[in-house]
Length: 246
Ligand code: PGA
Image (tube, rainbow, N blue to C red; front, side, top):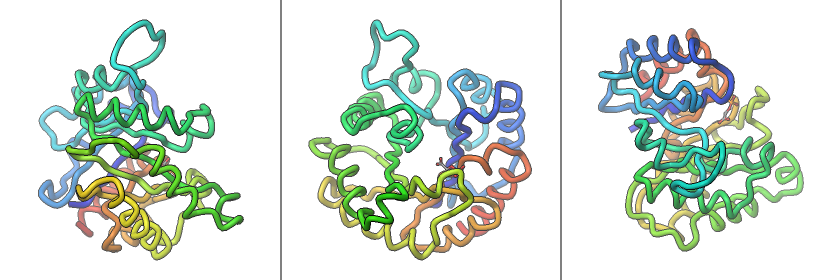
């Protein structure tokens, strides 16, 4: 199974999200070989769900709270997203870590909250440019995996996305061969925490022009795409390329 996950971030509003979802619902792809999921804003969630109704496209949360319910003004829990039709949730996306100051403990707690609510967490990990320059890539990835996964009983499905921070939204995508090596390393590290096979995606400046190169790498289970997934023409091209490679 190859995965195309579309993180619409805060790029598109209600009407545009609905229109994108309507187009996506009509795009042909081989459902037995490829899984597609969109991560719209929370405000667009139910409209997008309405458009995707009857299609094979799944939905996910961009961010969840670490606790299921209570007096938490402005927060949205994994339980609420599950009730709204989500199957997946991004956890530890670099924008949450670096822009919103999300700690390793918060990432761990959110991952557990997703598992408890029956959502499949997509744990995002990746080194910064400084890490890379200081030869700390392995250290950073090991640390992020350890703090997120240690002590977690992973019985059900769980996913990881390798997202080098320097590659996100920069146009400076990680070379597919490099991403493949790093993902091989991540898969080895994951064995410390679970015997379950965890699909590992690549994310960071994936676009219709380079997506096929990642899909042809054996260890890369799919891609998590931001900017290029939030425009109808490039979204259609991404679906077609992943479908052709799946
Ligand atoms: P990008 O974002 O495709 O816009 O680089 C990727 C991500 O944030 O996962």
